[in-house]
Amino acid sequence: MPSGKSSSTTAAEKAVHVNKWNQCNQNHPTYGGHQTGYQGKGTKADLDHHSRQLNPNNSLYRAPKPK
Picture 1 (cartoon, rainbow, N blue to C red):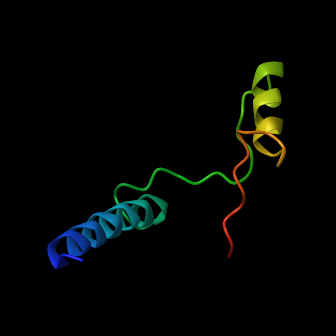
Picture 2 (spheres, rainbow, N blue to C red; picture 1 turned 120 degrees about the vertical axis):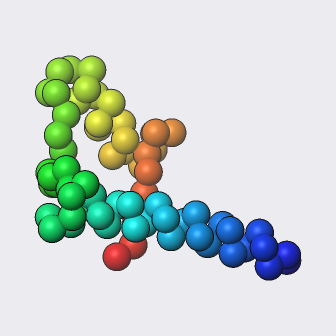
């Protein structure tokens, strides 16, 4: 595997994580607040879509990431 490709991919991935950390850090100027839980609008279509995402038998399902 070429070393340049893996290092650039690693650098890009690190930049994404650093940006996310900065946005979630209350002491950083780019902090935008953090809301936990489902923040949908509550309309029928919105709730239906949310429930499909939580259904493992649906194509929209995304398994939770391991901690």
